[in-house]
Image (cartoon, rainbow, N blue to C red; front, side):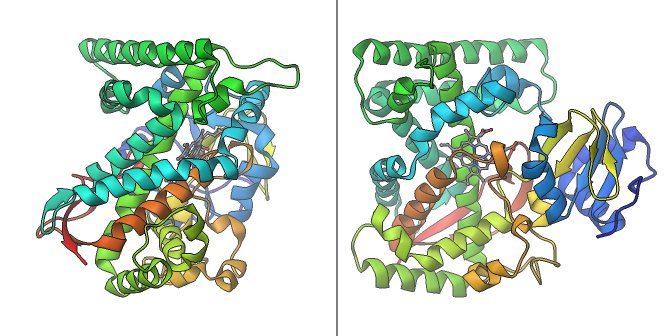
Length: 434
Ligand code: HEM
């Protein structure tokens, strides 16, 4: 690793850096890594950034030195929307909320949500028609949205689900724009108020009924801290919104890129189909099957490597943080990028090649652990990792059991790195019965 007391970086102006980072962030960071190596310093006017592209440094920021950093958000509105929820809170408060929420994501609970995941995957499978062309990105968004709504609110949402989905879609559409003109800012506030009202109503009714329905909301409602305190309605709302927001688009993108990669790699697709036919015969996949679906899981790992839904995270230093031969000064922001590190030839030879075999145990053991971190790591790692894995494996198995997908003629898959790594213009695909 080459580091210097004062890390190198581009000599372009802060304004030029900001412009280049906003215009094409993936190309911007790839160029920094190529030109300057593992530690790159650049300034955008308001902020000094330290871009770290080396597994040991990544581990320091996420795990070893995590108390020296707080999360940094490129979009300030994240905090407005998620209040004091897990994704944005810090320190003792975050620690408490995480402890209260964790049981809802215990693997036994996730096995319980699997029935909902499999059920909606089957609904989608049965809705598709042979020869139809559809936007797989929109289909995956629908799937992960209904799954998260149903696992959160259970039976309560059947009536309200579409209301919640509409309000949430309106919010998300406006969410990522860095500034909003007054009429759109008002629209954002209005959609948020609508969503709040619906979610709070569900929470109050549930609390009044005192019932444990076995869904995420019941788990969160019944959670108690050591001093026997639980969450208020407002805290529950913040956590419900967090799970909604953190839990559906990420998984939808991961699934969409998985289908795309399969269209580009027919050998892997053939092996996937063979595994499904062998392990399931014609049975419908369920939670207990996932362990045996080794190749299916290798495919999903490889998709998460090449197209990590969360493509970068930022951490602001609370104090001067000495790392290996240099210091990140208090107030500066450390940036690490799943997209860049997971495509580094040092850890993944011929990195752009889709190669599920990279996920054999012996290959994994031969690489540094922090060369792959799609769910981040440490105290702020993804709470929904097990949930996302169960959901994705069931969706892939259920859909690929019946359908083959091919890219629609003329559709060019392009990346759109926003909060998550989306396909620009969706993903037009043709479904063909197997
Ligand atoms: C493939 C799908 C997913 C990926 C790649 C993913 C990735 C991530 C990453 C990288 C973070 C940390 C972000 C940061 O440090 O700024 C995170 C946080 C989080 N994710 Fe996920 N996620 C996925 C699915 C889910 C699902 C399905 C849920 C819930 C149902 C979920 C809930 C959360 C929560 C609550 C946090 C905040 C945790 C905390 O700060 O304590 N995620 N996720």
